[in-house]
Figure 1 (cartoon, rainbow, N blue to C red):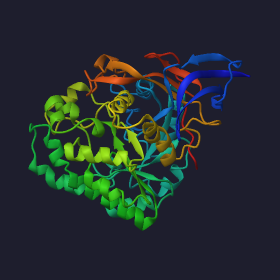
Figure 2: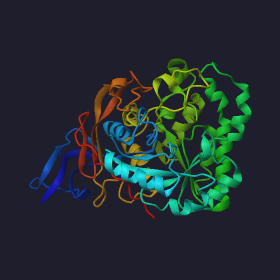
Figure 3: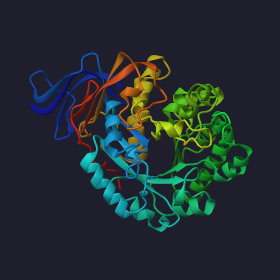
Length: 439
């Protein structure tokens, strides 16, 4: 048999565990897991000593496009993702202009199909004005979910009150993604702090109670309306204990940063390069996040890639914008956690491939199986590298993990059979398309 691509001799990660397989690809889909030595292909990859994962998904990124090309674009952000072993991303709507209507969705779909290096899903932002249209907007091609900023946003993208959130949940039926910090507590506490205080005050202002109140409010409204919700970047022990009791209506995302960094040390070492929302918290919350991941309470691990210029990040606290680069570093960081014995490769695939596909409804991605998209992340678990700023493809050119030594590295990113990245080089540009979601 002749294939477009064959991947031979790799150790593959299936939902049930690891196993040897020779994979054949035709027309962008996996056509066989039992390719023989007599079969041929236009391209053949020898994956001896490598692990073949389903193409990993980062379901929470801010590519800043349109609006801030000096910070990030769909082209540069998907290049960064591919270099980091990520085959699919889901892009947030808080751009300029924001993605809140059919016209912007149409622009974004066309732009993705023209410039993206990997596949991209699109969040539609909820506003008070577009709430009546959300049921129709969430059904448009390429839309992964409605995103609600219940705290920490600007302009008309924030819906912080119960009535507004309930109205969103009653407009449509698909799972709604939430930034769930409590805006009322944020504003009440803001006068307690001032410009120039230590960066560690970020976790004091946006404290655990702020996150917990927001999440409790959203989950209560999910029960009231019967609409499933996805709580993004959960960062506290209290939220995780609470969410474990409400998995019938709420799924859970945590971030690589909250799994990797601990306050206050990270603020003392990195200053503004550790400032993000919700904040990086202390060892108590860090341990709780790992415990939740290991006992199966976490559905998705993402990066919340949200770049800002380095000069802006060096401003004093309260003027320093929140957000960190992350789409290019999430896979090496998680592979290093595997090598340090914190989790298994099978578990990583569950929360960065199968999990996002299940939560957002992507029927053709997330696992190695015949008929699925031929998306693959090939990794060398023994390869040792140091993450450096000069490796970062985003225009801002920095990472909070500059100088971090890791063991485990992505060596190829393949999207629908197209080899996009191999051995740290982009070898196939603009092969990305919008993701197809279940209606």
